[in-house]
Image (cartoon, rainbow, N blue to C red):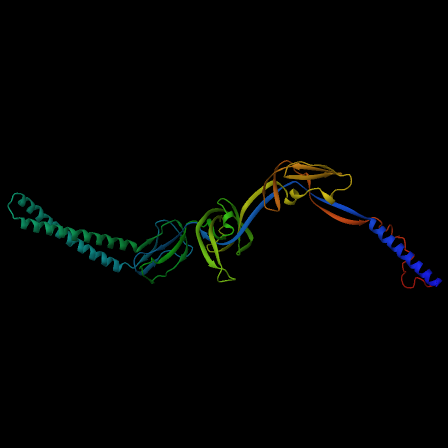
Length: 401
């Protein structure tokens, strides 16, 4: 019975010592607050939207023919440099020349008839005024004159049309530029019906190009003329080209999304200027476009989270001094145990960085965030620590030497 009491007392003593040790360990845990600071510095603040587009010449003209027939001669080919008024193609003129000759003959006959009937009418008019001929003879002369005049006017119009059609057989360049496409061959027959057949496509100046980008309807509200643009093309993946938004077209395009045929995607065309001095950009290349809807460079800025920091609650150590300011927009600095609020005027923000217009000097370190950690105050020193006599030792520790 006495041994049992002794064991119970020993167990209670061991539990008491263990509890005391654990509680002592908890009390020795200290809270450590670490503040992260970033200096106010100059940087770039931007927001952007992305799109894809096609490289196109600024001025592009499709040259066609208004008459049907056989292409007789071609005087220009792909990549030919042409000038305004230069002969670039000829249609077969035999049929057109025959039509012109027929129209000329009709015109000559109609003119002769007109002149003859006109002289009769003028003579009979004079005689009728002197009452030397009857009203019937005068009216017949007037009728024949008017009929001859109508036929003469019709033949004159037919002759002008035949002359114009013959001139259409000689095709000249309407602008100075470069031939970027040729759609016909010599000897090919073209038919000018409801649609004028295209023979050549001529670009005015390939050193001045444009990108026609399709911008999603969710992003088009942020796009405006004059915004900076960068884009790349697969042909030169290492090069980045610069441009500027020059036009936002009001016409939209709807297409079905790839995931569902019931959902439609609405896009708007945005025209972007692109300088092309070295002629790397070729017509019809696909461009991957970034439009900077918000763009300021070299402005004082801080991380946006610095404006949300407040020194309060567990972040304050004993003896901390706070020099606050009633301003809603402020930045905080810390010197020793003193927190100081700096009221600032802010500009644009992209959610990550915010422009600082005034209120604080460049290179001033401001607090962006704080972290709280627990640190053991009774850490081992030089690897030596006290051992609890009631805790079991490692295996073999009780062996006699």
